[in-house]
Length: 429
Image (cartoon, rainbow, N blue to C red; front, side, top):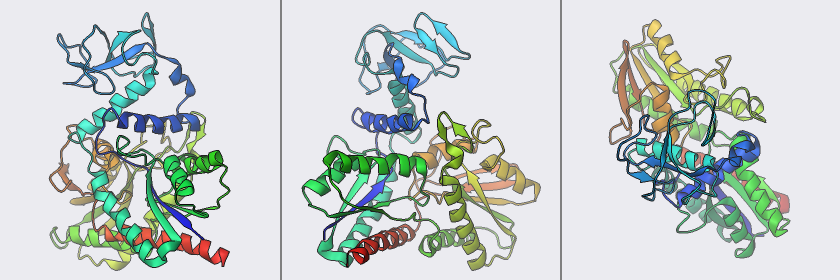
């Protein structure tokens, strides 16, 4: 018996560059194939999409822009400025949906001619988010040691029975080595001669969109492509375990120590969020994210209120950082950070602590999307510990780093993965 173990992550490259452009491109292609984004977006190719590197998505044309393409290479040729589409527009340059962001266009020429405009615009969108983080994401550096420690423990526990490899939906370093699920599966089969496969995702909350129809599809497609009839076992999500909750409890205690005794404190456990409606052809309302995220929150909330004694009033609320618009969240099932602040402000709370506990590190979703959900527009706006403080009415707000007490992630990750391996061993013995 030879068990391949993939410690699988959604993946977040430290940098957006000419290489990682394709990593993000592959990811958004999965969203298109899933029906989340309509396939029609790939029909349009007007030339090369460009931006002024000094101000991405600038609302006004610059008299002397320093143009770059979506691969961040300088462009010296002529380009038209295309303003933001405030309504559906049909022009001599093409069709523009309402909301299309401003850009420059090298019409029917340049390195982007032959590449769908959608991918180039998406690349610039990602690049702009990375600029909002100061040009680099800390997520990989914060989370990779967690995977390495889990791998070390598994090798110690199971010895030569297991071969452990890392894989990423969005390959963080495609210019150095291929670490996509497809590439890693093929390596395990060809080089390591595995007989069984365990896939364990570095998620506190598993979803159909990211797991069932994205990452796991790539794993299964690779096996099918190779004609490898290898049984696959998927580990359970990491959230909801006692080990996971222990780290959250420690973090809450740590934050409460910094506040006046007897104060009224609200703890926000913030989540990514996901549409509660049908988006395109994808019925996001039925995605298992919703039930899974509820289980993890209720488990963590119960543990906090049971284990923490606080002299003042303490409440725990669940908030979400994305998909809060009316079209995604029409019945307000997901509470926004602003709604939560309004609620606790009306109840006389003086402190709010947002703990982004869904993520094992400070991802773009935490540093950019969550901050934007609080109405914070000027980014980056955190200290060296990735903490943000501000005041909302009479409430003192702190958004903590998502990177805290990593042992709770490691312990839960190891337990869930080891349990999946044991299921394989027990079945075969």
